[in-house]
Length: 250
Image (tube, rainbow, N blue to C red):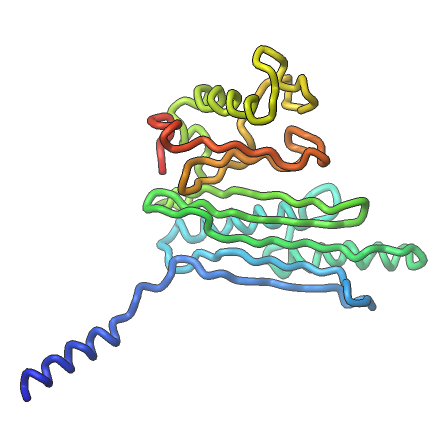
């Protein structure tokens, strides 16, 4: 009898043991125009990972960077709004559409749309890589789709730049250029823009966005970054084996 009771107590203790709370929680914010519309209405949808169970100042650093990045994507006009929260980002975007419709009531305006879908793409004890898929349409022939990569020091929450990621940026760029030329058939010895790309100053550069993956680093050029919209995005993979000691942190 005592033995049976002891076993039951152990089972009970195991059942009530709490698992650690996840470091991030996914949150979604949505808003749409209040003006009359049919099935398709101007709308904004923002889904992002929010740092919750992470020590300060890393928590605020990560959340602020995500917010500022989203604010720099979801806007209409010459510069992003000065919104202080996600509700403000959405309402400012929608107000821009509403104001134009009121200003030109006889004009037929297609509904605008802004979507952000963010998630943790890669995470280790050293880094947190957040991937933001984004789409915006504010009229015209087509909308714009892109990807943003936010790479954080997992302990401090600070954003890592390429100098902090690589031991030798020039060597990484040389490796990437060779792969880019091979994949997109740009003859060796020819100008990097010989086949229609528009790298600045006719020199190959690393993209604005790099993603950590299980295989290696995905170098991702968004539409318009080095090629026309018709060419869409360009991407190449540098495996961890290829990078070797050139990669400081993983």
